[in-house]
Amino acid sequence: MSDTLELPHLAPALQAANNDAYLFDAANWQVLDANPAACKHLQYSLAALQAMTLLQLAPQWPDGPVPLGDGIGAHAIVQAQLQRRDSGVHAVRLRLTRAAHQGRALILAQGEEPRTPQASAAVTEGRLEQRELRQSRARLAELTAQIDKVRQQERTRLARELHDDLGGNLTAIKMALAMLARRLPAGDAALQDQAAYVDDLVDRSIDAVHRISLDLRPSMLELGLVAALDWQAKQFVRQAGIECVFSSNRKEIDLNPDQATGLFRIAQEALTNIARHAHASKVAVRLDQQRQHVRLCISDNGVGMRPLDRAKPQSFGIRSMSERASALGGALQLANAPAGGTLLTIKIRLSTPREAIIAAAASAGTQHGPRQPDVSKP
Image (tube, rainbow, N blue to C red):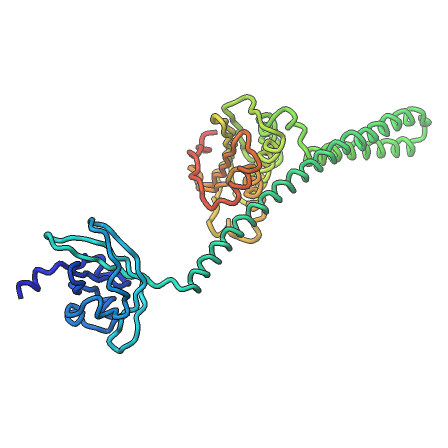
């Protein structure tokens, strides 16, 4: 009885495992202990198993058990067909590991579900699907970046043609109209009024061309992103009637045209969303250069955004900003602002090759947002 009490036992973690676990005497492969999962799978009680050896459990085992090295920790993996009490077969993959307890040589056998050809094929197929999905996302990111680049180029071309061609023609019309108006009879009030009306119509058309050109390609971007964002913040104050403060740690930041345009468009979309939905009274726009990175933060003190709002299918503004951020090799992040509203942050590299853009869009990882600015004290 004392010998039985002194037998080594499986660790509690192995006792609670869902897969088989056995402890054998290394000298004769006598079962010293087994966990409840093993007893259940083989339909034997623990006492019945302790009266058996591995060769009795697996009589078809060729030439005895697989030999292990002499050193502690030596291991081998075998595929076993263990006999159940009802004469059925329990197929199990065993990891055999040499161990010792109080000078007694032991063999620990941990069971794993056998990997059938079908299971292996399913794993392989799953990995192929994951790889194809990553490649598909990468191609989509590349295509999105290219489409956005072409779109910006077309907007720039249209803005230039509107300003130079149509704007120039309207200016010439206004000059010709002024010359004709001076030759009208002084006493013909009807013709004078008509000329004044046409002149006013030309002025409104010139203003419309100027406004559309700015929407397509803000001329302020020619002076750099810092100047363009400062101009946009002032425009936002005039148009929305909401206090908006812009700040930057640099007077100029050297960005390529695609990056400058992308960040400017994100800022425009964010300010539009604030004006429509935030019910804010203060907005802060901050642009910083930190070594090889540029960070744009836009925060407000409005009602904030619920997580469900961000996932709405109608949230095209957020989706558009996120896609632009990915195309720039960065990631858009939304968080709660210190003043109770929403904080939008994007961080990009100053110079991002196409490979980095694709990798950033395909990656599942996320980055932690930077320190949040306080818009309560603009």
